[in-house]
Image (cartoon, rainbow, N blue to C red; front, side, top):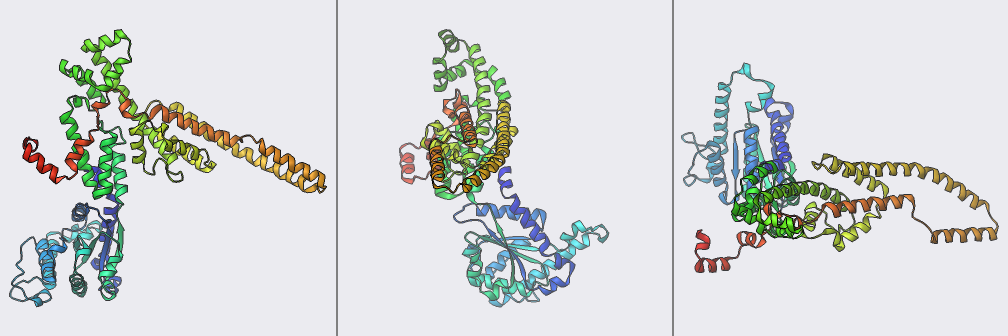
Length: 555
C-alpha cells in the first residue's frame, strides 16, 4: 500500500499545489481574480487508456485533496448523471451528505431557487456554501488566523468527473455555463478524469464553453512505469525474502501487459502467490529474514528435516558430497540443520549479489541498439531466471554491440556501475569497485595520450603534403595500405574489450539462475499452473469442476 501511494505522490503533490493556489486570488479579492472571474480552474488528469485503476487513483486523489486542501469534494460518475438535474442532485447530495429527491423538481429548478424550499440549483449550493464557511469563520477567532491557514478561510469546492469521456456533451456544457455565471460568488474547481487525450475536452466542448475553463494538464505515470517501479521495489530487493520464479512472474506480467494494465491486480496476484506459497509449501516457515530463519532452524522437527531432504535442489547438493557427508546429511538432523543454516546464508548472499550485478548488466544492455536483452530490467530479470543468460544468442549479440560502444558512453556506464556496487549491501564487491575505478583511470590516461598522438598525426600529414614527387607519393600510399591491413587493436579498443570481458565474468559468476541454487524452493514460488487457475478466467472449466468436484471451491 505504501508503494502504491508513492507511485502517484508527485501527481498528488502537483494537484494539491494547483488547487491551493487556484483560488488564492478569490480569497484575497485581487484585481487579477476580477479580470478572470468567469473562468473556472480545471485540472485535466490524464490517466491512460485501458487502465482499470482509474477508480482507485481518483479515490486516492479525493482523499489527498480532502486531507490537504478542502473538505468539500464531490466525485461524479457519468452513469449517475444522465442530465443536469441528476448531476446537481449527486453534487449537492455528496457535499451536504444527504439524499435529495430530484423527481419532484422541474427543469427551471436547476437554475433558479424557490424561497420556500431548497432545490437542486447552483443558487442553493452557493447559499449552503456561504452558510457553512460563515459558521467555520465564526468558530475560528480572527486573531488565531495565520498566513498558513489562509487556505481554509474559503476552501474551494472540488468536483471530480471520474470518466469525462462518458459524460454527455449537454450535461457538461450546461454545468460549466451555469457554474461560470456564479464563479465570482464561490470558489469552484473541476477535475476531469481522462483516459484518452486532453483533446477530448475540445471535442466534447465548443470553444464558447471551453473558453470558460482555465485548464492545467496533469499526466500520470504510464502503466509500464508503474509496473517497473513495483517490480523494482518488491522483487529486486533484499528487503522481502519471498521471491517469484520465472514462470509465475511471467504469468503476472503477461496478464498485466495483455489483459488489464492494472497495477492493483498485479499486486493482488503477487499477494496470491505469497498466500499459495505459505499455504502449500511446508518449509515456507523458513521464508523469512535470515536471522529469524536461523532461529527457526533450531526448532525444526524430524518430519520437517525429512521434507528438506526430499527437496530436489537439496538432493542434488547431497549427490555432490563425499559418501561420509552424504550419510551424515541423510541420517543426522543436527548435521542437516547446520548445513541448512550455511546454505540459507549462501542463498541470502546470492540474492544481494544477484541484484547488484543485474542492475549493472542492465546499465550496459538498456542502451544497446534494438535492445537484445530488453529495455526494461524486468525483461532482463526474467531472462536470467529462465536459464543461464550467457548461453543465449541475445546475450552474445549484446556483448558484440557492447564491444563497439564509444568512450563517453562506456565511461558513463562504468560510473553508474560503480555507484550501484558502492550502494549494494553485498560484501564481495570491494575489489570490483577498485577494478572499475581502475578502468576509469585508464580511460582518462588514454584521453591524454590521444591529444599527443593527434599532434604527431598532424605533423605527418604535413610531411605527406610536402612530397609532390609521384614515385614517393605512390610509395607512401602503399605503406599506408599495408599498415591498415596488418593494423593492430588500439589501446582504447583493447581496454574496451577488457571492460566488456570483465562485466561478462561478473555475469557468469553472479547471475546463475535461482533454480540452480540449493534450497531455492523455500523462498521461490514458481507454480504457474496454480496461478493461472486462480487468475485466468475459464468459465466452462470452472463450471465443470464445480459440478464434478464441489469440494474444490468449498475447501
